[in-house]
Length: 176
Image (cartoon, rainbow, N blue to C red; front, side, top):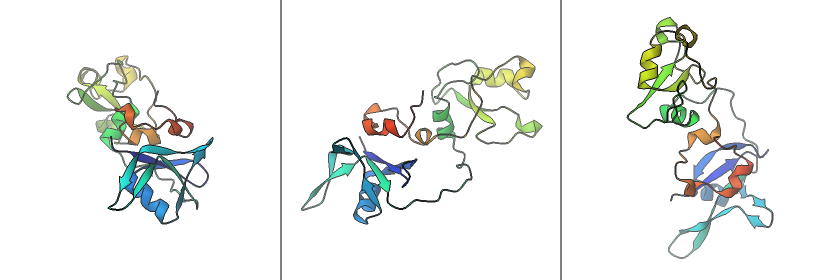
């Protein structure tokens, strides 16, 4: 397991996940604090070691000064799209693996559709073929849900539930 830390903005909104080394570096520079929930600080049960010292790895840290976040959408990435859609065909609900997953443009590119978070969905090969260059309603297909920009959780592969810290559920909505 490679522990990561959830980085919160000064206003307690989640920004992103950072490596354990990055979180520790921000802590040492005095740019973040380890948050405390109840009586205990949000820490992993693992340690970073130097030749002389062991440091417990923070699980959730908060910036001490607010970071201004741009309003532009995050860069489109296939893996994030797969995570956003739960590795499930958005037309037939079939669970997909690496070899069977495709990306469907809801408004096909030949009709002016672009590759974007709000126009692309995960699709199985059969549904993608059936839809072809048509709009979903033209071939009696319905989307399970409208495509949206991804959430913070979609940017991190959480297939291994051991990589999830219990404190994060307060700040990051579940994928379901």
